[in-house]
Image (cartoon, rainbow, N blue to C red; front, top):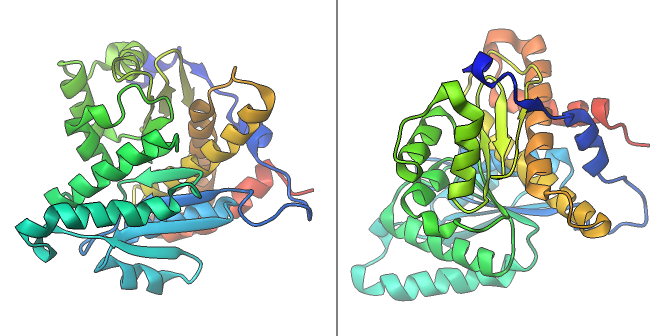
Length: 321
């Protein structure tokens, strides 16, 4: 796959990262550097939404929210007082069949109170696959789309959209971040074929275009990114360590940089796609942080070690002046 894709244009990732990272000055107020919300977290999975949300803060977002199930909320709150945790979601076991419609309406109403404050949503870390929970998240995604809020979709969020393509089809502010298996399922569902690594860039281009111009960040030895119009790659060396949770760091990183890029595009005109910029910058920073963490910890590198290297990585690339 690597040789087949080597002709894809490598992004000038570090320059892009520098160009969209905002300056720090005393005139700004809380919230201007980004307000991110992670929709995820259930009984079984509480680490993933934490990793995504805390990564957004470590990179420079001002506020980071987690919208999760009631069972997950106390656990996620215990990880860090920095996160704003909303115990709004419900799973099937806790809702009677006759109450599902009213509960779903209540969940959406509660999320709606916050939606206008969010610069980007991350959908999926630790979400699980409970049917009622996924129905509620589908409603949240529809509302975010009507509100023109960008969405980065990862993990079980990708399971959801693979089976409900209408949630993202034709929405240019949607970003999908599939791993190898998630990408395979998307290709089979959308293109009705198997993954073709001999013509990987063209297939990625076709996939993004067929879903209506969403942006896809295909994770791998190199990350490949397409919005259905162009394909670029990020091949900065990362880490050979494959501890779980690195995709959650990436989703939080992309969300922050997408929010920053969107502010930049708003000032400089519509010629730059903020989703592409956000993916390139997020991929580059995640890879550099993973490399730094691995230099120090080698085989014992954990996701938390990589998170602790995010700030230093960004400072090395884009120093605060």
